[in-house]
Length: 266
Image (cartoon, rainbow, N blue to C red; front, side, top):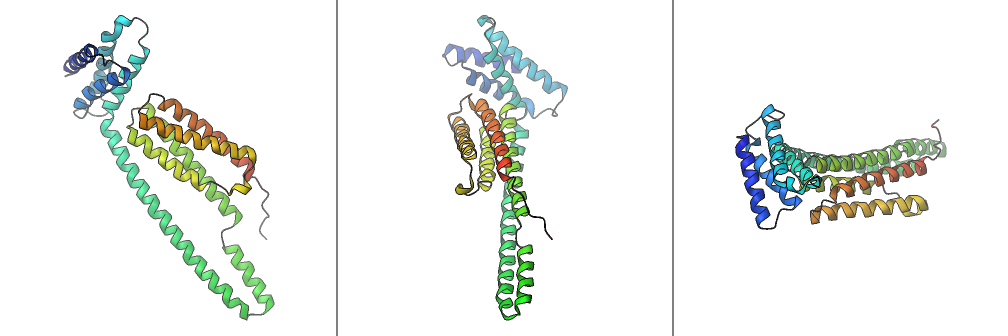
């Protein structure tokens, strides 16, 4: 089976070479197609799969070795293609699971929003009725209502949670791109990161100049990463790494701007 894969890869590489299409992206696709055809027959992480990956990479090295030592890009492409082929089924499951998680998150957000609306209506009704009470009782009721409403600490925790979720989605996008994830998978993570990131945006008038500059950089890096996916460029991984670093810097700056003294509750 492995020998057949090696022969097929070499034959496809030779054909691509004869037609002038032996580019790194074509090498990756050839290896991925050959490996994925048989990967489902073996258990993940098995010796057979590791042997197939080694043979697939060696087939490419043998085919391009006349270039001498300048074969790093071809070897990298063969490894990427082999990883994508071996993990194609697993990545399909990851995408499916990610889609289900996003649906659950949307449902959770909707239910939390509805809950908050119900609470706001009830509190508003209580505020209406307290006009009929004595001034002293009204003061007590107003104080109680304010303590129940979203506090400054709760708002900050929600924002920090959104920050962490955005960074985690960017990390997942990097891992997916590095270890053979499909472009749809990477795009899903970037979309998720942008959704969480949008929830962290404070009002413009509350932004310091430095933080606003970092926010603009993060917007730009998100756009570049999305564009790299659309163009299927090998620059995608570099764009994702830069995005991760930019996001990390931006959230650090936000942490500094968010550190406002909070009055202790009495």
